[in-house]
Image 1 (cartoon, rainbow, N blue to C red):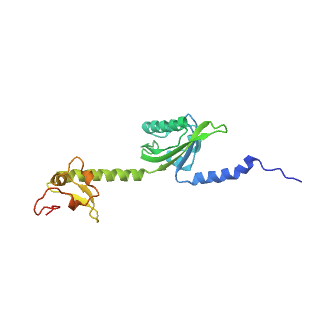
Image 2 (image 1 turned 30 degrees about the horizontal axis):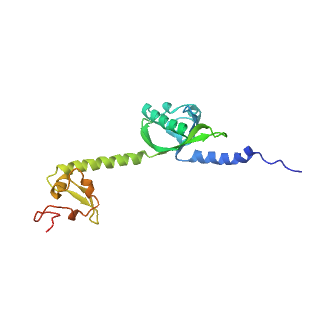
Image 3 (image 1 turned 45 degrees about the vertical axis):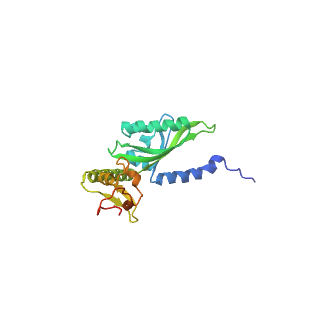
Length: 208
């Protein structure tokens, strides 16, 4: 007696279960939305981020969970995906309403299509890179503070790596070397002891 072949839905069911389990255990936010921006799926990480349940998230929009500015930015990016059909990859930053924390996400979004290839929504992945973004901001601030201090010192200041390649010159150094102050970065990567064009006996970086 021949056994009926399993339907497509029966064949896909185990795969869907596995994918669902993987998404729920992922440490990144994974979600889907309809064309109006309402959530149709949100994994456990999204629920933790929003401090809400899946039941409350479904049918809600980003305006319910993010600051107004961030919600507008997200919607603009969503609409771009929905209108162009192209993948979006970029940063989205703003406050999360449930905690008041300022977050930065590296986000990837792609359109969802039906069997007729019509766009019916989008899926997205959001990776929390807030700590990295804050670290970069702190480094930039420290560099700016160092350059401001170095430029007001009555001494020539430069920094070089172990190979002697310059990584920074202050204004007094560039003025002494005869190089244009407006573009000291042009000297970066050059040997700092061979860049002067003026001579001053006993001065640093001078040529005989």
